[in-house]
Each structure stands twice: as C-alpha cells, then as structure tokens.
Length: 206
Image (tube, rainbow, N blue to C red):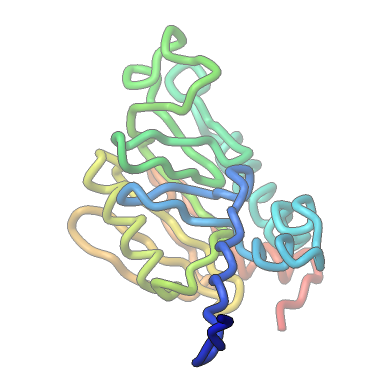
C-alpha cells in the first residue's frame, strides 16, 4: 500500500562556496581577512589581478614616500621593504604593510628569507585599505591593525587615507589624524607632505 508524503519537501542547503587561499590578504586573530573586492572575483565579475593591483593614486603616493625615504635613509643601518612585505606577529596574526623600515640590528641579513619577517619594523606605512573590512568597518580595521603592530614593537604606524585626504599617525603614546597638506614628521626629523606633492604634480583628488 502506497503512503502519500505529507508536508513540504526539505531542500538540502547549498554548501557555502569555499574561498580560495589566494584571496586572503591578512590573518588577524586567527581569522582570514580577504582582499577588497574578493566577492566580485568569486562572482566572476573581476579577476584577481584587478582587485590586488594598487590604484594609480596609491602607486604615486607610495613612490613619492619611497623617494623621500631613500633621500635620507642610511642603507647601512636600515632595510626599506616594499610590495606589501608580510609581517608574522604570532601564530594567529599575519599582516602586511605597503612600506616597512627595519633597523638592521633587528632584521639582520641572516634573517632575510623567503618567509614573512617575524620582527617589528621601526616604521610601518599604509596607503589606503586593501582589505575587505565589511565585518569590522574601516576605522575598526585601522585601529585593530595599528594596535597589533604597536604591541608587536613598531614605533610609528602611518595611514595615508586618500578619501579623507588625511594621515593617521600612531605611536604608543597617541593616535592623531592630520590633514595631508601639513608637513608630517616621518623619522629622524625628516618630513613629508602628500598634499603639497600632489599639487606640485598637478594631481587633483576629488
């Protein structure tokens, strides 16, 4: 005797799409933080190259800061690392910086390898946010990452924010936001002025 089925059929939930490791930008508190725009890659709207590449404005600012640094830095005392050098803070935290200045007494030649650096830079510089921070907000991400870097031993963290046209300067004593049209001390009495440089080059930021 056949028995009729009653009630709606249960539909098995679709498995969550696995996010590939190459879309991980950083790891904080043991949780992956993905590149900004990773959802567009998963949806086939963008390529990984499109979301991982820096904007022309970011690139110009990073290039300018590198030129400023190389004019005064003592290359016998410091390593200046670019291209998002990875910094291994602990087993739960791996972050990156756009520019990182290391004292060679902390990062000697013997520690240069194919792995992430596991010692703190003296100076860490970030130009805008390349991470997807929807879950924690931009300000939450900035302050969380900054605090982790400072606790690790970084002396000063700089965030150049093109949308706000401002620079966040953070050390263990204080965190302040400065208009990027002002002269800002980088280290050893040397300064930079993002607004003045862009104006000199005829670059307008809307």
